[in-house]
Figure 1 (cartoon, rainbow, N blue to C red):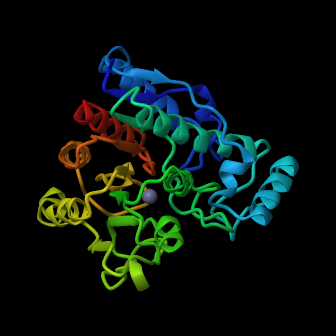
Figure 2 (cartoon, rainbow, N blue to C red):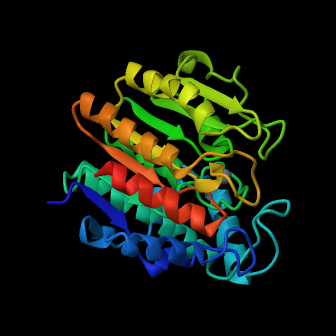
Length: 311
Ligand SMILES: [Zn+2]
């Protein structure tokens, strides 16, 4: 048994907003080329994604929002939000497949078929329970967390190193102490979505379970090295039963829409150290989700570094 599974499928490439859009359908192929070039396809268990059911999507999203996406998807024109997320025909099915890919990987881990897994294209952390945002239609991270809670887990950790704040996950679980959250991102004063201030630490019973670390534009590997230990310490403190890593590659230097300057080594270190935390928790469960990344070379480097460091 390989300890790591990776979802690879042309079906994931259908989730894209057209050629020329930063989130184009070519992102999957850019990843797969590097994945094969490094021989990773022979060293991991390759999984096919399934499609998430409506009931699974409803664990996170409102019924009204799902109907809205279904209707727009059939029509195939316009936007789901104020202008970031254009509609394409078949969008509902493509987005449900991204969620299904995350669930396939999550189930492989929970059933003991692998210890850790990676899913490209997934990690759509901006989608809220009742609306789309920032290229994100359905929030696969949120659905996975809801289903892990239904399965009886009492602590699920979500760590996010994408350049953008994971607002769709943060605000959905802001008052939920089950969800341990840690997110380092470019300061919201300089980058979409403008949230994730250090004072945002969770509400009510969840106060203190959330860690937001906004970084100034231009932050590099040295800045990461200073703040990252706070993330691993925060996660380890709560002894989570499952760890999700949203490893968006748009925090690498050279991304066309952000201003952080990490190298792919940051993504590799994040994966390796969270895997170590998960081992110390006694289960080893880490699910890494690709997230953003709009420079194709960068996403290929960062995501393969994550897989190599999960092995
Ligand atoms: Zn991003």
